[in-house]
Length: 208
Picture: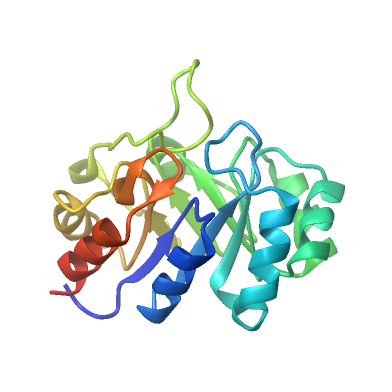
């Protein structure tokens, strides 16, 4: 594994853990603004993150599920993170709107099936993860998918996500050829609680 793999730890909500990740030079920290998620960031926590990490705003990604423009605006007024991740069923029209209104990088979640045929443009990175079943929340739901079947026909920029942990991350990187991974529940002791030990373990597994 090379040093050129970018890592995003998503679902961050604890400033001490965020600080540790920044010290480790982890590329991105994901903040989730979906109220039903156990990793939801409220305004007070966001204000605290702004207080501590304002000078690192380029390392933060705000994650939204079918938001309104106003919802995004409200969060950015508290902490002006650099990247907006759209994690619902947002279409091209909405992506265009977000791009022209905020002039920020956009990540868009997508299933491996839809990634093969997507016509979406103006997306800086496609975050590929397993499609949730009808009763699951938006997101990877700690589910892996068949990496051996992966093909990037259109040579689009992508982030590998979904069920990644210390036991499978090398295999996932090797099979997909990705240079960017997104890890969430794979570094948690329980939903919403990141573990320094698990973060350190997965980092050394990627880089060694």
